[in-house]
Length: 242
Image (tube, rainbow, N blue to C red; front, side):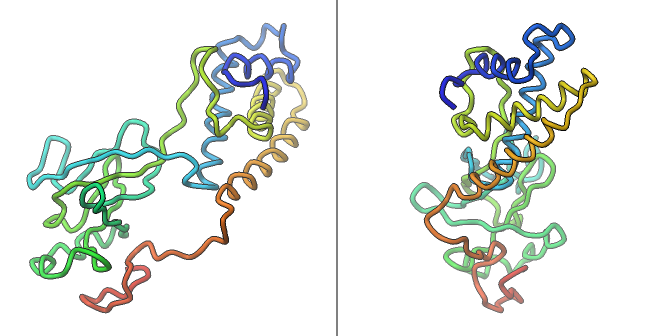
C-alpha cells in the first residue's frame, strides 16, 4: 500500500482508521502490541494458506554420538522455528530429499538389516519428524551426515517506528486486515460495537487467503507422495502412507 512502508506509518494509519488519535484509553505501547498481534495473525494465515510464502534454511551436521542437545539422531531447531518445510541429506549440489514418518514408525527401519538397503535415489531410507524442539532422524544408525533444513520462521515483531513492514504484507488487503483485526480488539476494550470491524476482517481475510494461495500461478496443484517415493514392496514398503 503506497505510503505505508514502516511500522510508524502503519500505527498512524491505524489510529486514523479507528478514530483514536486523541483517545487516552489506548496507550501507544498497547496499540503497538495489538498491531503486532494482528500482523502475527496475518502472517500465520498466509503461511498456512501458501506454506512456502517465506522460508529460511540452515545446515546441520549429525554425528555418531549423543550430544548435550540430545540423542545423536536429533537436529535442533532455531529460536524462530514455526514449521518444518523440508529436509535434504548429502552436500551442496548433491542433496537428496528426505521424507517424513509417523511417530509410531520411529523404529521401523532401526534394525541390523537397514544398512543392507540402498540409501540413494528412490530408495532413501532416512526419514524425519519434528519432535518438541528438535527434528528426529530415523533410522538412528543411518542418521549421521550433513543436512539442509528448510523451515517457516515465526513472525518477527516490529519495534521501532522505522522498522519496515514485511514486503509480503505491503498490500491493501494485508494492511486492511491488520487494521480491522486491531479495530475489533480496540473497540471491544472501549465497549463500542465491533460489527463493522468483524465484517471488514472477514472480507479482507478472504481476499488475503485467495491472493496467497494463488501466489504460484504457473499451473494446477498436483498430488505428491510425501511418505515414500517408491511403490516398491521391498522391506514391506508400499508407497503412500508408509
